[in-house]
Image (tube, rainbow, N blue to C red; front, side, top):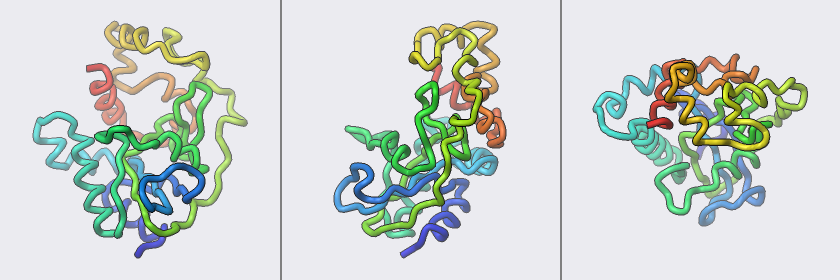
Length: 215
């Protein structure tokens, strides 16, 4: 059995980090699980780690999801946990709900998740489900409370605002010459978050995700 510090150490060796710990009773959990430990990319170490993987190099579809399946399943086996993913499951696991219950992630002014450490780059590659209690991370304060909220007005075409997300307008903009800044460096709204700006995510990783989002 491993405590939270041991889980964190094992995750970091794979380019991942513990982004939150959710206790039973704070959110729905499958089966008899008593704790959910959320796993996110550990920036800036994650991208160099992932790009050396066979999944990234083999030219087959969905390399990051396939990498996540392989790596997190192996980690779960090592730690005596159940591997859980935000993709490939019908119905999908409630990662948004788990994130909010962790006390490390919140709904932002533009409704995307915002992390205490990751800002609007908040994302999850998977989670570990334990049939025992795992201690929480130290509580954090929502970063938006004292923020000027530049994310609310950062979208060049007003596709992503507190009023909602116009996906069609977003894709149309990404097809334009002006939209290549978002395609190359990542969503302007996510980049506008002051926490995101200090997170250390490689622009090449953002470009990778934008290509998959916009294909």
